[in-house]
Length: 174
Image (cartoon, rainbow, N blue to C red):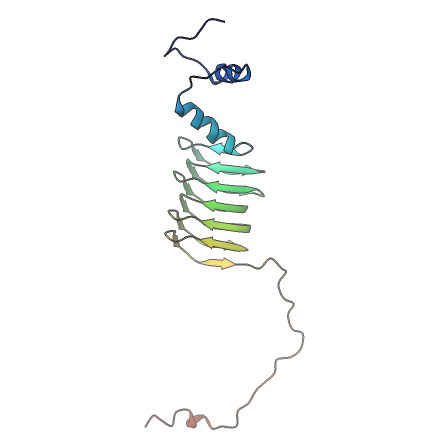
């Protein structure tokens, strides 16, 4: 195999083959950083920062969105909203971690985590909620219990009467 000259183009496959044979690699740090980044996210679907979507998104397992989405996101999986993300629409999922911007309501079955630099403008409903210091949340939240709602009381309400006259409560006013 001919030796590669310094500065000549090569692929990650060339590096992998060299490493498999025990040879030294002359890859740049950015290539190895990218490979580490991809290894960390293996098994996750990724929509990178240059992606823009108008419409609805459905996924099964894990999704990392770092781009712009305008529309509805539905899933029984785990959603991560990246630092560069700008989401405009309703989100319904099992679990969510927000690093970027969301403008819309979020409903999660399990856990919602709002990270330090994120912005959420919308209502939030979750079984568990974690908000880090520095997060911006404009809306109302409802933390639901993981258990079923309490059964209504079937008995009649009890009436409590006080024998004190009503004007005694206002006696200080004259």
